[in-house]
Length: 190
Image 1 (tube, rainbow, N blue to C red):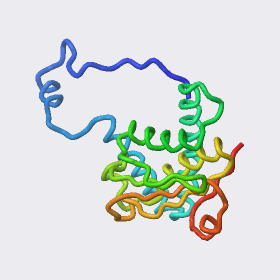
Image 2: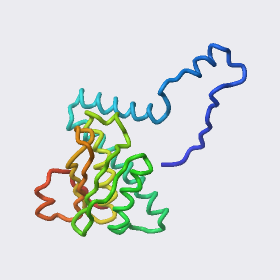
Image 3: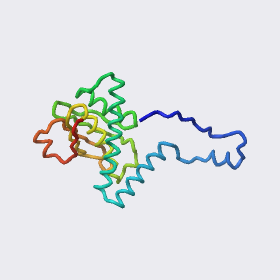
Image 4: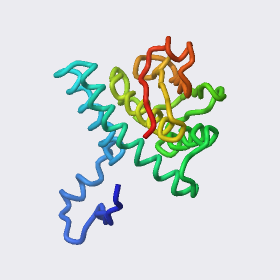
């Protein structure tokens, strides 16, 4: 995604009237982050209501794939590599979520899978009862893993969106019997 130069707008401007200043001083919990999380929540909810969960998850999956490709390119460029190793993939998945205010950590990692847990969703409370939003995590993780390692199957074992206390995500890197039996989404490298 190309960078665009954006300028900010000062809260108060010369010539603002007292009514305008009074409105600007209101203690309202509204800023860009909350606005964008609310926007995504409402988009996901509207899709779920109109076309159903499966179709909504499909649309969000496409967005997640594009975001995954973009983030993958960012990390590979920053690391100066053409492909990430398994260990780098695991650390990138944790770091990208940290940067957007998630709290993922690696529970276990080996040649067959990476198991992660998360105690804080980047969408915060806006993810509750919106399981289709979890397709962002599935597709970003799956796209990054598969594009670097050839294959990934992402299983969302527990989700905050579904009412669990945490997320548990398994990223299978090989088509083992366990991976084949698990319910999740498969991703293939380019």
